[in-house]
Image (cartoon, helix red, strand yellow):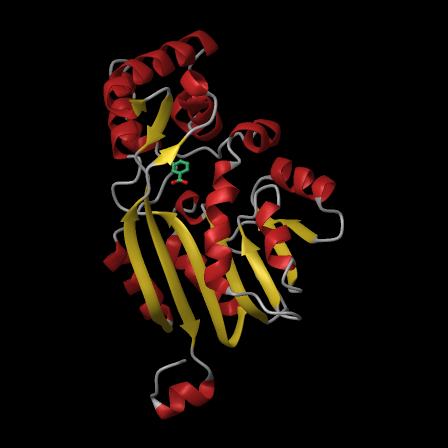
Length: 266
Ligand code: BEZ
């Protein structure tokens, strides 16, 4: 059984802030408008809720991690934040848009999440998301697999991540009834802060489910082995450059009028 990641909000904000920096481009995609209601699925410590609200939108952020939501509330007291599981979350609000950056790949029952998004949206509402696609962090996963196999552990059985192909994910959206306006699967080499320490920040922030049951000495040793395997390929000019592959989607919930007319949603 996959364990929840042990999130450290302080480390996340201090060393992993590239996550929300890259996400600002996704806000441009959504084009939030004054007065709109927007649900941010997997909001982390709330930085992109703040970006979305700059346009005058009313934003609610949900995240499975109580630690992240506690940090978000401290940073952004005016916004509404809730600890919630996006697989099962239900709301009485009909949102104009659902937004999600770098969160959906942590949710391993994607059809349930897609249903949550559908039910949260008003007819005509839009869904904009970015997350890891097939092959994301492939070299890192392979190195983890090697180091853990030496200890009799299957990395694949423990993986907390869902990295679909573009076809798989857009099919899920269409089955739910969404009109997929745009979908893209692209490489996004991701530069880590802090020179040589960059990869260990990443492993400490994101990989705790792989390390369940290991002593802290064993975890350090696994991280050293992973680092040694990856260094020739991913340490470049003093920085770790990680092999991210993203999926971006824009999908619309057809309004009843569009459905009856069988027409495309603008
Ligand atoms: C990502 O944002 O692609 C990602 C984050 C954590 C683990 C794996 C992938």
